[in-house]
Image (cartoon, rainbow, N blue to C red; front, side):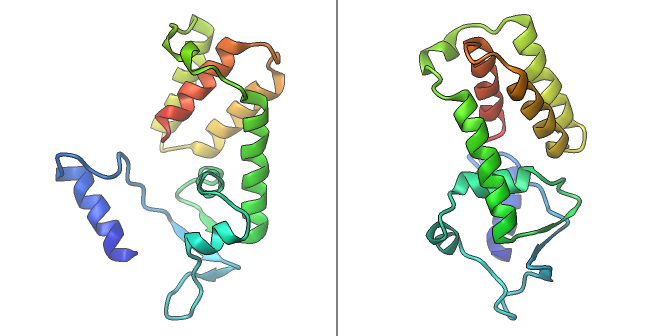
Length: 159
């Protein structure tokens, strides 16, 4: 994995078509409160994570829920929490008609996206951005298609 990460970093800076758009170096990822180390056999492969009933989107949510400068423990409980959070958003935001994504956003919805992107620009504060997103989702009207479309567009910025 170490060499794969070095390739991703190099491609971000000099490749014509890099495989990733963003590269963030995490403080330290732990597993069951121990440093992850192949030599200790303390690793998890995505195939194993999937076998345990998690998706790539759950792992993505797991990483977004903590600041990249903090230590984070990769555990079944943490993945369960990330999965619950992701499914809560999915339930609130589904279904979104992709045709609505061509319509311009109203100023209030555009402000939501701009404020979230400001938090990302402020040292990649994804936990604070998610907290705001959940506050908006919890208070939103079930029929607010424009707001759901805005949140969906915000998600597209984070891919």
